[in-house]
Length: 252
Image 1 (cartoon, rainbow, N blue to C red):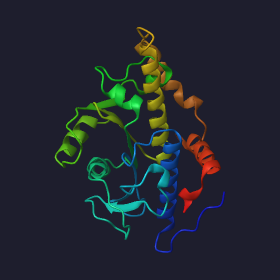
Image 2: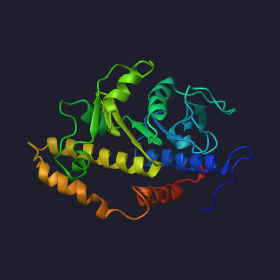
Image 3: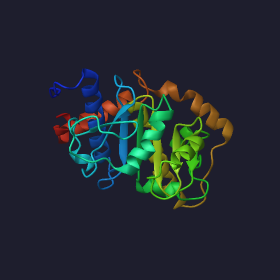
Image 4: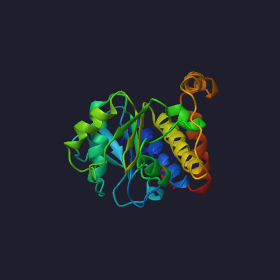
């Protein structure tokens, strides 16, 4: 599929980041992870210190394109002439991680039914299925404080995250981050599957928890079942091919 021409005022690196992020919004929508005009996926711009891209507030995920993504700095200032506003809740939550975590290149936050449900029960995600075992010992939790629009909550978000890069916002939803967008995508996809299967399992009776020693072997061997190219790269590329069969307007 041909790539749309980038706007002349953008660097090649920015245009590539815009296209990858726009594709991701369309993938999320295709997978049923949209939430009206809310929720966010952000990526840092590799050639501009402190700058990142976020979805325009007011547009559905299915309307996001490479050109209409908003470029802002770490303090929330727009860095382009985009007419769309930025959701304060999205900025506060994402900017604090982009500011404090050098490896948080891409951050994803959703309100999926399964993700919100698991974030709203005591104990959160339990190691009762294949995908949940991927995350055992790797999930942080943050208590619900209301809609995330106050900057002082950022300190607690970073503190509660610690050295983890996956978090359940209690009573709220999923937060994942990655060194690349495809890495964050495969984390989100796997976590969403884990949550869906946990809900299905609990509907049938008492779940079987996987022993810790088996989980350790499972996590050790996961990399042997990955396609070369980096975590999530082949998975994300496959999803983009499916999106292109539906609509290629995200490329513009």
